[in-house]
Length: 329
Image (cartoon, rainbow, N blue to C red; front, side, top):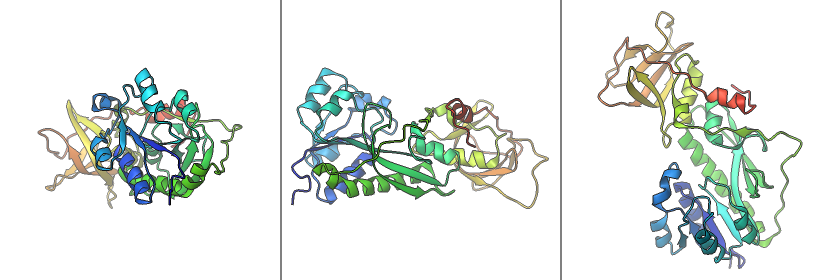
């Protein structure tokens, strides 16, 4: 049985999530005709870049190495255009699909995007990171058809899933992967046969665009409430650069931390002060309204000591959200 219905499917991506998506489709009997994966020489443009060359070779899938991440070179246009793809699935590709490529696809390009609210709220940047930072408990993932805009295409299907205080950005990605795979397996037969239904995104609603996050947005302000710092740590932990603080010029990256509730108050301590340092290398820091226990950290030639005071640096994450018109905290 030809699950592809005679249609040619390509996948564009540069992450381990791309491998997981393709592996799942192969397992369910679909054929992938090509993978578009940038060369390692361009990997500085992609956070968490994964070279899919060996995976493509192992599975006998043609791989295209574009000269530009934006697919703008003449080589890119010819190499991809000559494939005569019907469908392009986008996973782990953090660029718009150019109009020239969209025009060559007989059915279209499809990918997922989500937010803690229905689209068009939360288009564009780092929705998983922002959702965790804001302490949201649900996320809505949407399979949509690409157009020339930013996450503005028609929606083919949606699934809402739960986020818990135990989730980190890593577990969010695992949940997101499973939801993405579920959406594709459900709707791909209709996409390939051209019988899929879709709904346009509401045009009456303002399309709030989530702002870009940078490594500097991981800096810790100990004047924040404990909950906010806890959310920051889990929102930017691995595979991202992590939340961080300073003791004088010493940078300390914090990978894992939890609120530290105790019968006693820490109000006599200074904000940012290490209240206690334990033999297992964990330590407790005074925050605006309580304390945070650091369970895993990374620093060169440093061990925590009680009474050391970590520097509080202004974090501009919430300022960025307000400038984008998003007033949530």
